[in-house]
Image: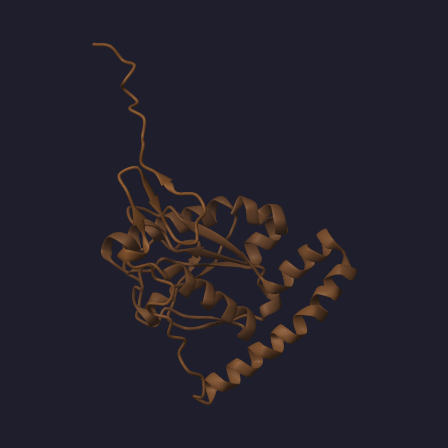
Amino acid sequence: MATARSLVGDDGLQKRSYIHAHGTGTPQNRVTESEIMNELAKTFGITNWPVAAVKAYLGHTLAPAAGDQLTSALGTWKYGLIPGIATIDHLAEDVHASHLTIGSAHIERSPESLDIAFINSKGFGGNNATGLALSPDLTMKLLEKRHGRTDLLAHAQRNESVQEKVREYDQQASRGESTPIYQFGEGVLEGHDINLTDTTIQIPGFEQPIELNVPNAFSDMTD
């Protein structure tokens, strides 16, 4: 949050940001996570911080959870909706929300009015992995500031062919014409591909072998 403040200032952080909660909704998680978010909002002067929780729609996808949240954030910047938490009809009494906006209804915001999305994908054992995502508009402003408008326009021209391929693929997928990319087993080494001796392991594609002559770190020590 301090990093976000350094980029957009206090006013930008307070009025142009929101957060994706880890949002498992368990009795333990809802208390600890809401308390941390609420205290941070209070500390940084945010009065009504919008909270989303995409697990309400997807469940807990474990490893891809942060990707789910980032995808949702990109959707918010495209369509102007912060998704409501559809699996609740009221807040539990133990949820800390004096400085948060938590509800089942979607929040409509113009994409240009949001600069920051926090991705609280968390880690097992605690609220310890929050990411900062910048809006496309803010990202382009920062890139222009660093590289200049001329370089940015040149990049946009080079990127046109990439965007055209993206549009074509999206249309194919929408029509059900795209096929899965199945590469299972490709490029996988089998046991007989590896040259193994008691001193080295030689793996195809790598010039240097893995040395197995490991020095004894205790050989020079005396009793």
